[in-house]
Length: 122
Length: 122
DNA sequence: GCGATACTTCGCCAGATAACGAAGTATATC
DNA sequence: GATATACTTCGTTATCTGGCGAAGTATCGC
Image (cartoon, rainbow over all chains, first blue to last red; front, side, top):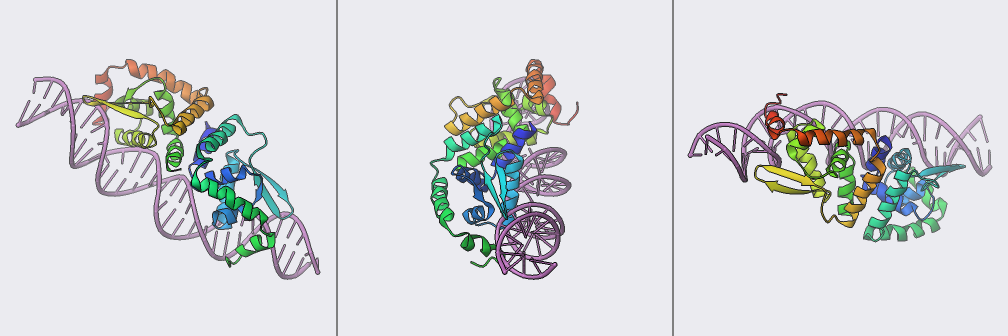
């Protein structure tokens, strides 16, 4: 019950469901997710933590970077939740646009991406 | 997207997920749901409205009574959501207890049930 | 070690949400 | 038509949530 409510609460935010959907494409570091959503790093970090607590994503630390991805072995409840998202939202304009944006973000140089958010300078 | 977020937000409350699960057993009127949850009628009414808006339940008015039930023909997203709840929570102690309680509530006389909540007198 | 980078945690604020009781609406009964 | 019943809607309050920027932590490069 606890796990299930953690999942439903995690899904009850559009930015978090978007994250789960574009993470289907593979792992991304926090600064890439920041670029995807256009939110402050602290906000993104919090969202990622909520998804992590719910067992909907996993993290991997490599040097200064932290990569998040969908879990390799999700719990049954988490697996069904992700499958549900997938089948219900894959065709949504917003989600399709995110998938396209994702490719652009992955191609961006890390220097262009990550160094910008200390001062908010674009 | 809108529909989907309405569903996730509707599911992100324990009382509402409980309602959906005990409504699997068949339609119930508001005063029976009030008895199930132990909340004020106004609160229950609001919860039912949120579930209704999300397409997760339907209503039927019979005289003074309003019966709520799972939809006969749910949308694909709603159907998957309900199926997900079902497969993830059927065995939860709380949900099993609700199913048992439901039988007791259905057997209760309507006079014993409904007339009590004007003054809160038990 | 020292500064820079990539996050995370903390403290704050505005807006959303769950709860209640009181007042309003609709329907049955007298 | 008046009264009671079964909800619903409204107004209020306390708590939760999402957002931000500032400060803290960990790691890399010099």
